[in-house]
Length: 563
Figure 1 (cartoon, rainbow, N blue to C red):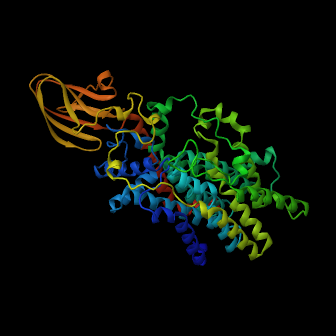
Figure 2 (figure 1 turned 120 degrees about the vertical axis):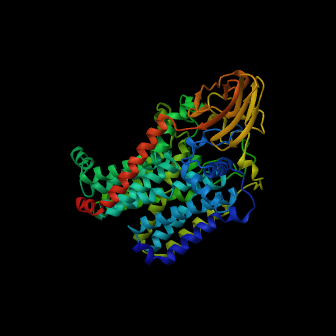
Figure 3 (figure 1 turned 180 degrees about the horizontal axis):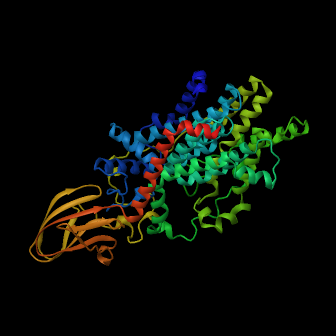
């Protein structure tokens, strides 16, 4: 916070950078055609509708995929909840999405600046932040992919690094809590990014803990079992525990989706080639992509140059024997850089194709979301060694010249808001349909949620909410009824308070809830409840939350223990 107070001008610059980066989104009406924007905008709207009907946590989206789907169980939580909150404040789904892009870009830049200020002076930290903001992959993520949760995740890697530094180097309790909260929010926002970011923050923590130690088996074992290491791991574990209400159902119930039955979702053609590394060609379209901009992933010319430049400076430092280069931030950044380049190359493809957990990354180039933090570190550190403002100006001009022409969206469309409130197809992909259903758009769209399939009687609708409905049934004969809802574990039907069996495998109503009601007048309640697995996950989260609150009250004792 002291850094922020003394750097008000830098804060305003970061605000300007971020506003400039997303300006095309706000100047243009509608949203640009990207791969993921429709999914995230629909998610925001569906979360809003669910919360409005009293659901929390949100598990079911009744307007998603015609008859409703449990997309919230696997969807990115943080951006969906934050977007829904904006809808409660009167924003439209599209404006909400744009604001989230801005917040993701701004706060990731702000916290990265604070991290760099731990190592370099203000001007060098600022130019590093400028480079991060306008990095090639960040542009690609926003204006080509529309990968909102991935952009938003960029907030939490710097906060984990800051927290680790404060805890290990400064022995400040704030670092302990910052790591815990960051892990929690990152896990909620994008669990895969928590895994990918570990490619940086785990080595960084080890590097901080080793300090001037020579790397041997003995020092590594001593480091891994040290009090600081154990406490930091504990901090991260509490963060994961608090997010368990989302993480456990996500990992365990993915088997009920087509995606969960893939042998390995990894794309074998997703590694980076030299053309991706040293090219600066941004295709407007390709033979595969006409509406969105061409899906060609680039490392970036400036980024590639800085990797080589940083390696040269490191060699020079070693040649001049200016202390132990192992303690240099540049040393860590260069090693990290070559490690990330290796795992994005074809040489590492076997790791991903032979391991389903790693294969869930799907595309090796997604690791660029981690890599984009490294060249700015190299830039800031290198400039701090030269102490020449002219080099800072040159860096800003070069980055601007290369990046600014690419900050634009393609084929902006003003879409009727209603499509976000109800969509007959799964806007994510058919792979995220449940295994009991076919293509959701092939089912007839129904204006009513319930119908009589067999028998004679009358249905009076008492209420229909996102995950709960009630009907008054007057059955002249025994009835078989359908509720136009796709079945998923957790749906329960009760007739006059007594459980009734659900059938969902009738070929005529594939994957759709059907049930029987005896002759007479009855009240039917259909609701989506927590399963034993989800209740267990909720309990773990509550334990984690109580543990977090308890640790806050024990702040002074923990502080003494750390120091």
